[in-house]
Length: 455
Image 1 (tube, rainbow, N blue to C red):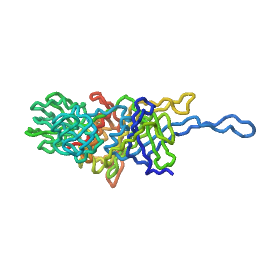
Image 2 (image 1 turned 30 degrees about the vertical axis):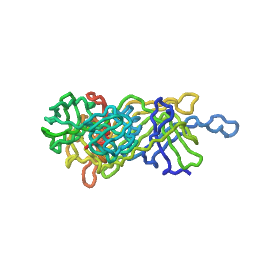
Image 3 (image 1 turned 90 degrees about the horizontal axis):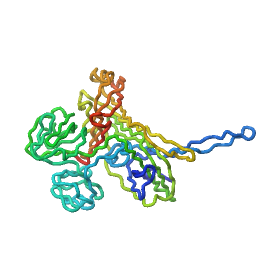
Image 4 (image 1 turned 135 degrees about the vertical axis):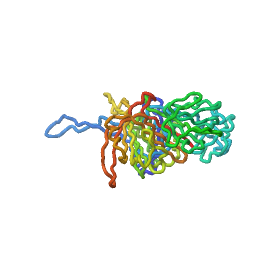
């Protein structure tokens, strides 16, 4: 008898849409297994012919719809799975990384490939970070040991440690030899700054433009001020993904490990139809995703050459302890800006198409990328109604942090599509649905960022 506890679920990105890769490496994903479903939903028709009396010809199965749904608590490991790429229809723009092969917690780390790393770079693994002091063949020397690093995980470039950098208004200025274009920043992305004497200057800020000698930033916190620095400053950059138009199909693998005869299900050609991220005060930050695919295979032996990659170990995030920064149109959460719940909803409008001669769909494709959501806030200003009535453009950035790692959701342009008033414990609550649209200036509707570590 199969049990939930012993069900193992993994995904692999397909090279050819709808085809299980040769010798696939399935990335195991930590999920809420009780709410993870993988089905081949049956569609049937009844015969119209009769012979005598009221007897009918019976029915037949004519269609099998390959569907999957997953649910989980938001964690950094989810960003390391192929699921987010399928939802965003794009690849991550990832910084340099290399697999750790030995001496993970030494100050001389052995890696698969040292190419691209340089002295002064900040590298990280599982929330531990250090500055590179030397690079040689298959070896990275660092100033402090990475306490959380593990062999088999990747050593990731997360930023740089530089001198000769000051703050002048909305500009971060290089007063020495450092060239900001070397950071390879995508305009509109957020970075984390550390090392300034003024605490408020060590913040998550958005980059509007980059030249060799300066970065112009906005969404700066209250207290951001000019500062001339004598020592070193750290810039944490992270990886980015934006909504795109590159189909990212997956094969899902479900292994019922306690079936004595072996039990393996493969669902090929899966594409994320929806991805919802929701949070309530004192609650989980929950992720749910729905997928539509081509075909479900049920067999007693695994696919030839299959290997299973262990899930990325990470703690789950919640809405009380793990909100690093939450900014609505430049305003941070405060006594005057209290959010009690939020939701971000991606819809790819995926459809399945059948042709004559096949029970399974022969095409799975997507429509437009639609991003909607909801903010539930305490009513504080009558302008909240005006912003909804006037379709005023706003922006939202939600930074989730845990164990010195971060996942950031950046929506640069949206407007409220309504506002409903209710009460909670004698307090007026405004429920504000929103609709996002592509920022013509930045070129995307949603940017997601992940930081292997930050300070």
